Image (cartoon, rainbow, N blue to C red; front, side):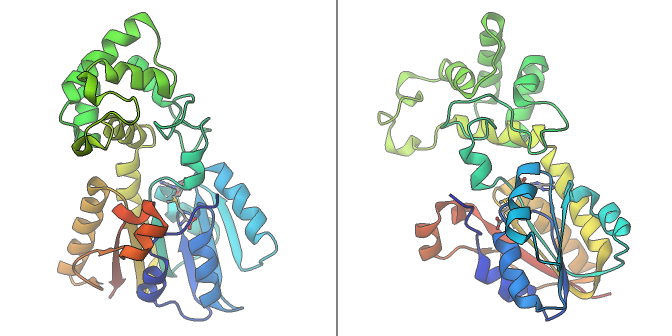
Length: 302
Ligand SMILES: C[S@@+](CC[C@H](N)C(=O)[O-])C[C@H]1O[C@@H](n2cnc3c(N)ncnc32)[C@H](O)[C@@H]1O
């Protein structure tokens, strides 16, 4: 199923795109936000679409193939400065980052993003670079794993999970989502283990959720990429240009909130609203992924 863009109306309203504008979508995914933005830009507009996942770029080539207004680039948005320089673009009118994973990535068991599917523990968004999650699990020390789960997963059982993983990998390498869930289960009381249907209501969220989040953040260096992407986008945003970021967990949102506030306090930016926009009830019912989405928008003043 094609990724359903979150907070779409809100993004369009607050980016306030004008006909003929030049826009960057730093997280193309399946091009849902881009498609809607292109409708606002008219025939003279231009959209530079970036994604670090080659499969997202291939999907978007199918969607936008013959649209001369669209340029698609397989890159990390942390390198936005270089991308725009190579395209001879000095300033842009709007930037959107909708960070996190797409429905297509989550649904592909070969990618290992979802603990609900059986598959290899890869988790790289760009499969041409970096280490797979299984490689991190094989080489990190118990202390490093505990720090990772605590800092990137905000996981209270970080030490216990690190210990059980180190114990499990002595007998068998942790290469699949099943291997990891099996190892984590060993650290949990029977009633919290992964077997569906028998967990108490208060423990609906499987403890593996936070471990998977932590591993994905580490594999893709997501928090540093976000910090660098914010700066790179800001440097290329023209005066009056707007920058929208949608984040999906508190670690990302904190980075966006602090950076946007800083620009606002330094009077080079203006926050369009102070509290982040969240999805309305109807959207959450239609698209559960939108439940944790937070949108922040800042305008460049100088
Ligand atoms: C939530 S999806 C975007 C969905 C998109 N807005 C749509 O409407 O289909 C996030 C996408 O951003 C990409 N992504 C995440 N971090 C990235 C980064 N640092 N650089 C480039 N792409 C990134 C992922 O590969 C994924 O395809």
